[in-house]
Image 1 (cartoon, rainbow, N blue to C red):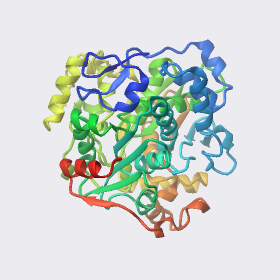
Image 2 (spheres, rainbow, N blue to C red):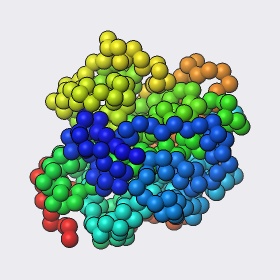
Image 3 (tube, rainbow, N blue to C red):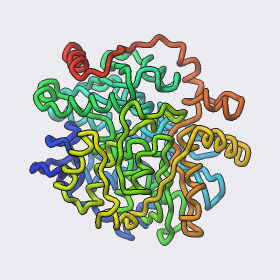
Image 4 (cartoon, rainbow, N blue to C red):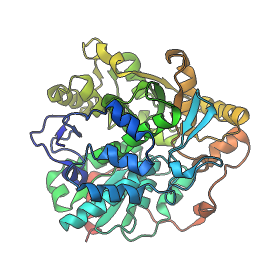
Length: 480
C-alpha cells in the first residue's frame, strides 16, 4: 500500500515512513492511494472475530511493510482486556468496545473509553505506541514526538509512550483550559521521556505551533520530530477498526445498516468512519456533532468552511472539542473534490491565510449527500439537559462530549431511515468532567479506584507563550 499527500507531493511512501513523519513535505496529510474494498464474504468472516483479530484484518490492508506475523503480534499485544479494563458493569470487557444499548436495537453507546486514560483516544494511541517502538527498534532510530491536545489526546499519547524505547514526548496544551482531571492525568506523570508544555492560548494556538515545527524541514530532520495528533495517518487507520466492530455489535446480519453519531472537534474520529464507509461498511449516516464551536456543522449546512481565530473560539464544558481549525477535515475535502490535490492546496492556502473558503455553489458540494453526512450542534444547556435525561431514563451517566453526541443524534432522528440503529461514539468517561456532572446531577461521577486523588499528585509542566521559536528551543534543550 502506497500513500499520497492531499496537496500533491510527488513521493509515494509506505506506511512505516509516514508513521514516523506526520505531515507530508508539502504540508498535506497522507491518505492511501485507494481505499481497500471489503467484500461481503469478508464481512461475514469478520463478524465473529475478537477485537485484536479484527484489527489485524483491517490494518493489514493498510500496512503492507510490516511482516504479517509481527503486525498480528502488535495487535494482540495492544487490544487486551487488561489494557481496556473499564467497561460498564454488565458489559463484556473482552469485547474491548462493547455496545451499551440505551434503547435496544435503536439507540446505543459504542464504548470507546475503557482504556487507561478513560478516553477514546486510547483506542488508537495504544496501538501507535507499540508501532513506534517496533519500527524504531527495527531501524535503530529515535523519535521526538511533538503533539497538541485539547484534552484527551495528550494523556492518551503520554500513557501510550511512557517508558517506550527510543521515544520522547513533547505535548502542548492550552494553559488552564482542560478539566482538572485531564490536567492531572498529563502533568502528574514523572517519566523522564514525557514533557508537558502549557501554552497561554487556545488549543488552536498549540496546534499551529505543531504544524509550524513540522513544516520546518531542517528542524524536523535534525531533531527527529514525529507526530501523534490525528494528522498521523496511523491514528485514523486504527480508529477505522471500531466502526466495523460497532457495526457487528449492533446488527445481526450484514444486510442491515447503522448510523454513527460522532462528537467532533478535529474531524479525525469521524474521518475514520467516513473511510470505513468508503471501504464498504454498510453505514446509513455519519452524524457529526459539535459544541458551540460549530465550524464543522456550519460547513455541512452551508458549504462554507470558516475557521475562527483563537479569540473567537469558545471555552466550553466539552473542552476537547473547543477547536476551530479541524486538522483532519482536509482528508475529507480531498475526497469531496474528487481527490484533486491542486484544489485542496488552493483551498488550504486560503485557510492558512486566515480566510474561509466557500464550496456552496460548486459541483463538488452538490455531491455532499453522496457521503451520507448530517450535522448538528449542542450548547452547555443542551449538555446538562441531555446528561440529566440519559441518567433519569436509562440510569447511565455520560460525559459532556458524549452528551453532545446524544443530543445531536436525537435532533437528527428525522433524517435517519426507520429501523436503522444509531450508535453514539462515547468519547470519555464522566470522571474526566466532574464539575459539569455535579452541575447536571448534583453528585460525583464514579471513577476507577486507581485514579482516586489524581488531582493531588505533584505536577510537572512548563508554561510558555504561544511562540514557535521558544518551543523549538525547549525541544532542542531536552533531546538526547
